[in-house]
Image (tube, rainbow, N blue to C red; front, side):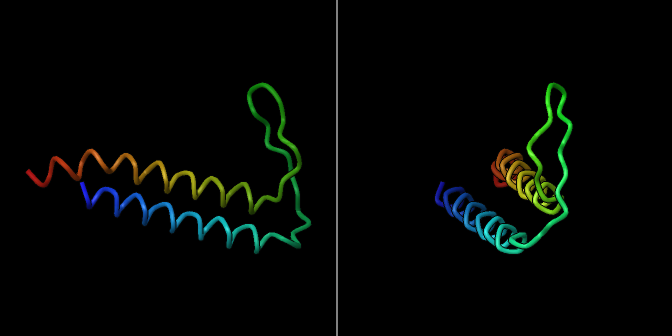
Length: 75
C-alpha cells in the first residue's frame, strides 16, 4: 500500500512538472490550429500544446493501467 501511494505521488509530481515546462515553453508560440472533434472544433491552440498534453495524458493513463499488474507479480 505504501508503494502505491509513493508511485501515485511520483506520477503526479512528474507529470505536473512536464505540464509546467510545456506551458512555459509555449509562451511565444505563434503556430496555432484547431482540432476537429466528432461534434465540434476546439479553440485555436498551439500544436506543441496539443501534442504535449496528449503525451502527458498517455503517461498518466499508462501508469494507472500498470497498477493492477504490479500487485499480481508480487504474490
